Length: 167
Image (cartoon, rainbow, N blue to C red; front, side, top):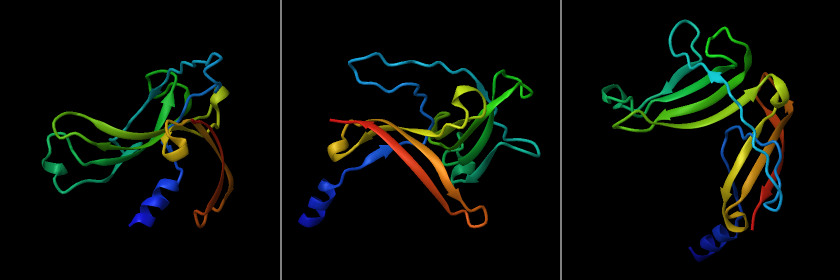
């Protein structure tokens, strides 16, 4: 048990949430950080012949819950400039979300924004929002780039460049 605790305490991990991180410039606190404002609409379509969000799992009690508590949904929603579905496509919102409240509408979401237009086109970044050991209070981002992908097997090699501030 003591060896296990020592091994756990000597591990250094970085927590990366899987969501798009809008970061134009990452600098130290001694200089000014840049703030970017992005405005778009995502269309979460659960009805019709080609839904963009589909239920992939539910709890045994989901059907009797007034909120749908326990529902798990996978989504690949279009991002558009305007609120109309015919508006110009600028990307996709790809995520998984879970109905997480028994008493009100509440979601737990893990979300990526994948842009196909403008200066954010083809960027895959994930924020670093914490860690443990040496990486306590870490912040930064990870940039992912597919190096190799086999469409038949699903096997992939993904290159990560991780930039992290820590104490």
